[in-house]
Image (cartoon, rainbow, N blue to C red; front, side, top):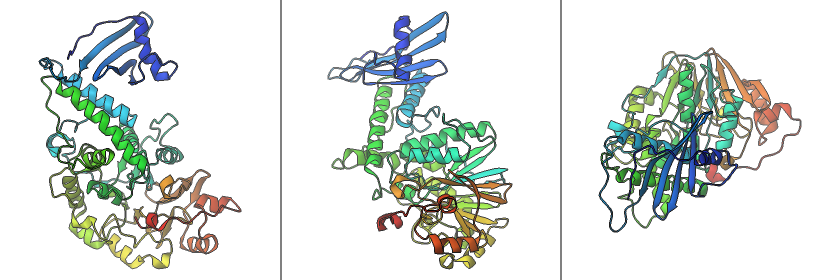
Length: 483
């Protein structure tokens, strides 16, 4: 095993290999390579032989200077490993690079150093020790995005419809605040990539005075508890791929003295479980790398101005428990500081993430009196914004005098593959539905009732208003309607 923390320049020709790899114009580097390009620095991780790999970076673009450096070159332990080299002079460089590279390969985004990559005790080193923000001042422009369920392409389209992300996946929303109401997990094959995209946009938005809030839904709670009933085959495969690179990153760190030994999140998972299931369990269990890094930092209830956001619904009993206390207890549980199963208010049909009393499409089945009582328990709150229940017939809509807005339109391929829509709230009062066809005023109660009578079972609010003969959608399987 050999490790080099030096900067040995190579040829100009070699320097261009990684850059060309990035644009896919050539395959001059080995197939088992991943490339990353940041600020004229092209990074490459390549397998050279069995259990052997190298990390390079090259600086290109300057008319007088192209350089190619070997940052790290090593062979994983053999039967007779040589002594570990002392990398104590550059531990943060090696560790940060490895974490960033794993981020890019797995999520295709760069989020900066992974604060939880080597955390043995979740809460101290995950970067989420600060209390979760529960109340946010009113925004001039507020966007609500419904359930995504692992559909990266529909998530991108929704964000582009909202005019907060361009075709290059860059934030263009300025001071806009985006709230995604939960259920990124399950039923899709790009769950991790969706999380990375939203987190990347959050960082960009904050630099411009905006923000992105990702909430926990019932499917996040289920996965942390190890309930994988609704996991797509591609979702298991994505976590299996994550595990491969996560383990490789840890293996690199273990070969260098001066780096803290990474925690083995797979150690106590039963060996007979399928590999991809073990990977998902390791990643999302309480205290796991993905759950601690992402879900633990996400609110379960959020108030923005006069709007209360929650995945299923909020009852007076939840308000009496305390919104900040709810978020903190969920955070501590996901970080692994509590029992394996989540708090009681996350379970049962009246749970924050499971409630459907305010989201049934027909208003006569929506408990407006209870909704009024729930809002009154939160002084200053005017409306509730919920997901969880697919608004199959008419898309985003509001009932009870616009006191509850339902934003789950079933956009994911795993949930009906309906057209994306988002809710726009301007100046904390003007509500508009944004869709592929443009902006539409939110229906009032009478319009919604008439539309349901006439177009029951048809496809989306935009199609309903703008197309004379919308296609009839096939009803969802009962399994999909109940979770």
